[in-house]
Length: 291
Length: 110
Image (cartoon, rainbow over all chains, first blue to last red; front, top):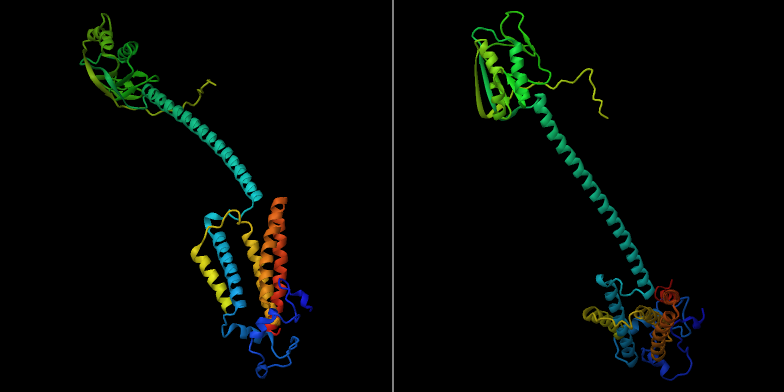
């Protein structure tokens, strides 16, 4: 190994004897007796002092020579710079401090790209959200309308209870002369006068209701197959001012019934509750032809 | 011994004071530190070889730092600052390793 490979330090090797050899002069010359392994393979030209001994000697005892002080000064600078650099580099908020300009530009570009991408994504998500809100609004509106329609139709079909102003008609029939035809006339008259829900002796009268004479006794009527007998009570929801005159017109229902010795009482009520229900029946043959 | 004390005191002062690094010096400080480390290892090896000279050490220390900073500065001006500083660090690292190997042979005889 040549001495020229002492990188970073091209010290003169035994050339001249000026101040170059100050350090060596200050070393306590020669402690050869302490050299434990005289056969050390890499001994330098003065074979009596090994590198390890030089290291120990320079470390202890401390000597405040000019060389030591200068080197201490330089090493102080080195340690200072090292600590400052480490501290400034490891500080969390200044991770970009040491970055070069082109790196910073690149980082900035990447951040811009990322921002643009995220904004696009946000826009898409917002569109999606408003779309979903619209569609759910529409679905909710449709559902509400369907429910309202179902209630209206339920009143007509007799599947839901109904209440409102109306009249109550009671027909006493002591001579058992009132047949299904008379009652049907009464129902028709009520319907013509705008009755919206009719209940006859606990039976809801709807579109498919039929009235027949009772074959067993000859008196009384069966409504939708259910046998009823006098007194017949109609509970009718509708406009009372229309319903009552419709029954009382000359030659109308009331006069016809009274001709049969029946007594008819018509009372206006502000609240009639029609709570007799009819099960919704699925038609076997008829199908909706709409759509 | 005093030199080692100087290094320790420098580290402690640097950690305690935590000075703000001037922006102009910022890119050069890490390279300068590495270059100074290289000079220190070279000096240590020379001391173990028995050829240490403080004047040479001072000159090599300062010139190492200045040249390293100069190379980085030049690289920044030329637009290849990142690559040049990488090269400088690699070269200095190789030298530090070879010096450390020599020191190891002296100290451990292996």
